[in-house]
Image (cartoon, rainbow, N blue to C red):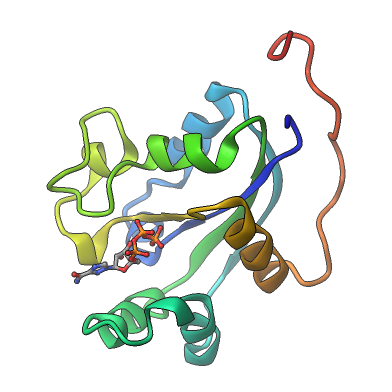
Length: 150
Ligand code: RTP
């Protein structure tokens, strides 16, 4: 499905370290389409909602503090297999295990400062997009691009 969507968030460390342009460029060069983007510093309750599946984890409190510590860049990307391929572009959760060439493999060291979030399934992408972009997104490109898709 060329119109699959995923939610990608550049976390506060990625913003503060000036990695926004490089990260966007990696997704663009792959052939994915940027469908929505905003910079926002979220409230604690919003971060808790985004990460509600992890609320019982011992690192939940620190994770929420990290996400609210500065502005994040929230984005929606579109393309065939963008959820799974986006996770590959991002790399393993713990940068110690992320391959070089992935975003986390190239840019970070600690799991608690791992620069970027990407939805882990089509269903969670739909939920996260609805949470972060409740007013919807601009449908500027919904058909397959002939120089990217056969
Ligand atoms: P994300 O949701 O941010 O894309 O990360 P993920 O799916 O790769 O990993 P997940 O298990 O959902 O964890 C969410 C985020 O929590 C932080 N974390 N800290 N201190 C720790 O042991 C620990 N483990 C996870 C990371 O920022 C991770 O991305």
